[in-house]
Each structure stands twice: as C-alpha cells, then as structure tokens.
Length: 234
Image 1 (cartoon, rainbow, N blue to C red):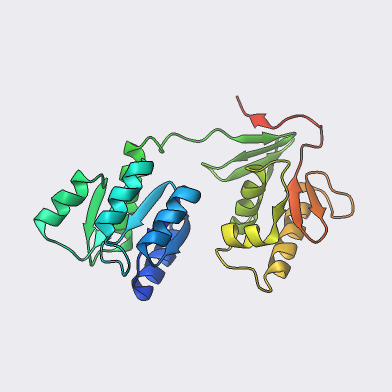
Image 2: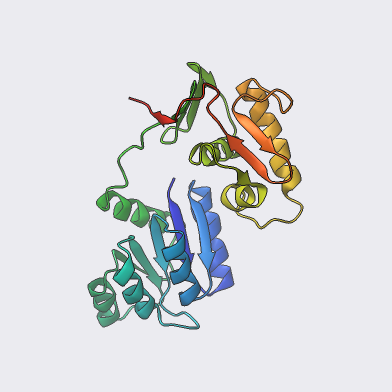
C-alpha cells in the first residue's frame, strides 16, 4: 500500500482514479488545483504524486518545478498533452514517468509500482511491534502473543494507523480521513463499531482495555500494555 496524491481538476477523472487506486489497496487523497496539490505534497508528503498538467490555477509543469525544488517524491504525470516536447520537458523538470490520457487504471497502477521500486519503496517494511502485538503491513497480518488475528480490511487499516502513532491520541476525524477517506460528519458511529469489533478480536473490551484506550470526546490511542517503548521485529 502506498500513499498516493492525485492532482486532477476534472471531477469525473479524479473520481475514477481515486476508485481505481483505492481498489488496488492504496491510501489516496486528491486535490483539484495545482497550489492545493503542492501544499498537500509538502505538508503531508505522499509516497507518489499523480499530476495532471492542465490545471485551472497553475500549469502542471510549474507545479512540478516548484515541487522538485522542495521534494524528491516520485511524480507520475498523467495528462492529455501528447506533444513530444511537453513530454521531454516534464521529464527534464523531474517527472519520473509520463502517461497520456486516456489510460487504464491497471496501467497507472503498474507505473506507480515501477516508480516506487526505483525510489526504493519496494523493500518490505519492518513489522510494527507493540507489546505482544505484531503488525506486518506487507502481508497485512496481525498476531497477538504469537496467535494470528483475522481482521477485515478496514479493521487492519484502523489498527495500522493507530500503530504508526503509538501512544498518541488519534481523533475520529483523523481516522475517518485516513481509513475511510471521508470528512467528519456522522461517521463517528462507523469508527465506534469498527473499534468495538477490533477490540473483540484483540481480546479486550472498552471497559477493560489492553491495547486500545479511548479518550472520551477525542479519539483513541494504542498503547503498550507492558509499558515498554514500541519497537520493530527482528
């Protein structure tokens, strides 16, 4: 799973890309303008950027140049511009790949995998260890005290998010944004239900927490019940 930022002004194309990439298991965010995309890429660095060139506020090549001045994040240009000079210019400005519309979701996914491999993102991440809890993102496996725990996709994504911020309180707004890709607005019940299911599978309850501790009116945090600092598996 990679964190992908899509910068695309066309709502239909943007929606199709979001669905396709999310369906491939990526965490996807999007922006409809160049400056908004640049701001997000700097403030919340993704693993890869999919960048249109025909943006309403700033030309995509200018966005690419500005991004390259402050970041080395891989960029896949996805645009209707098929002029050879434009392609060469984009690559010279630092684009890692160039796709001409229309293209299929599988082709974009293959290009993303390729640029991530070249950037060194293909190395399997080290499992996250919190007490007796071990979370392996590459295989999406979870064990508690050596015993496998079967989680749904959303349950795993929720647990993985909390594990990446061990000891921190993660708000329901953040959970909805990161796991469900939606803004806060009535979704707290969804979070509560999935937390309840997750607690049950980890062998605990809200009244008798072990790993998942709720902070009333704020959110939830994952803690090490042994009181040790989280580490990585050998």
